[in-house]
Length: 171
Image (cartoon, rainbow, N blue to C red):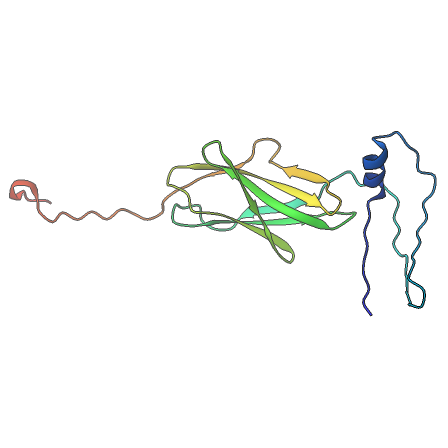
């Protein structure tokens, strides 16, 4: 009493079995079987024949929290794929040459990724990697320049002198 959606990427199956471009698909057949005495309802629908070779597209990206040393940095991302579903969105960042991977959570219609607090003065570089349900990957890296920001401080320092040197007078 429950529909089960099955998605297959026949192109990938063929390449995995026979290698790249060593075959020619002329037709395909869909069948469904059930043991004798049981009932099966089948609906073959949305049989699309195309080769999807592109990963999902980042349409919008914004750092939505102040980039100060005392904040986690939240990045808001909108991602779509015209052929299939978005399977995964990751923010990949570095501060000192080591790349760190953060999976983005989905809260329709945006994905959100949080970079943990960083030290004052650090420069953060990041890019976005997206994957669709067929495994196609796309990178959004600001045309190879990466997205970057400097960790700042917007709190003015407070100085207090409790015991002046040699009882000096401070004016």
